[in-house]
Image 1 (cartoon, rainbow, N blue to C red):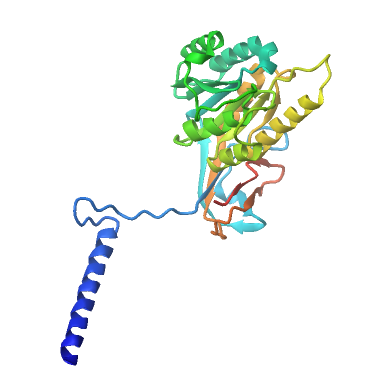
Image 2 (image 1 turned 180 degrees about the horizontal axis):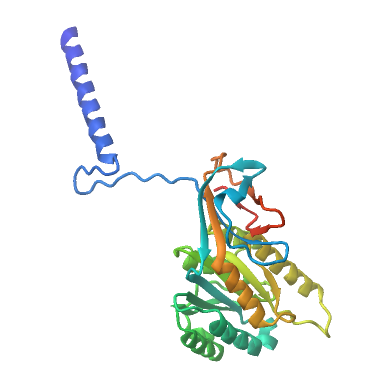
Length: 325
C-alpha cells in the first residue's frame, strides 16, 4: 500500500515536471507551442536623453562622440549604452497654439509666425501636427508635410473651432485656458507613438485656468517621452507693464522649457525668422544617449540627470531628469 502510494506520488511529480517543461518551452522567445502561444517580453529600464551642445561662442557643436561626455544620475556616473548624433534628420513636431482670450491681441502675429515657420523651417521630410487650444484642446491638423494645408486649416479654426476634434476626453471647463492639458495630450496622443527628433513649439503666455493636469504632470510626461518643449511667449501686458499674472506665466514658460531641455523665447523681443532658424538648427544638430541606470528601482522618485562635456568651454542643454516609474 505504501509502495503504491509512493509510485503514485512519483507519477504525479513526473507529470508536473513535464507540464512545467512544456510551459517553459512555449514561453521561450523564438519557440512556438501551439498557434496561440505568445513569446514573453520583458520591459527593460532604459533611459534616453536628447541634448544640444554649444561652444564658448554660442555656436552649435556637431562633432561630439560618446567619449566626449559623461552622464550622471543622482551624482552617480552611468555607463553610456547608446549614443547618436542627429544631422539633418527629419523632424516630428507639434505646433501648439494658444487661442484663448488672453491671446486675442496676438492672433494676427500667431498667423504671421506660423507662416514664417512653414516657409523657413519645414523641410520636405518633416512632419507637423497643429493644435489650437482655449478651454478645449483641438486637433486642427493631423501630421502633414504641407505648410499651405496646415495654414489653411488654421484659418478655418479661427473661423469656427467647434468642428475640429478634441484631444483627450471631453471635459466641462468653465474657464478658457487649458495650457497644461495642451502639453499633456499633445505628447500622449500624438508624439508618444512617433520616432525620431520630437518637439513641441508652444505659442502661449503660460497662463492656465482650466486644465485637468498640473504643471509637473505636463513636464513629467514630456520628460518621460523625451519630447523637448520650445516655449514661445506672447505676453499681453497691462499699460506696458507686467502684471503678477504675467510674471507667473513667464515663470511657467521658462520652467517647462528648462525642465524638458528646450528654450524659452520672448516673441516680442525676438524676430520670428531668427528664433525659428535657431530652433531648427538645434533640432537638426543634436544628440541622444541612453543608459541602463545603476539603480533600477521604480520608486516614483525624481532622478536628476547631468550630462558633463569633457571639452573645455562646451555647454550642454538637456532635460533635468525623470521620474522612475
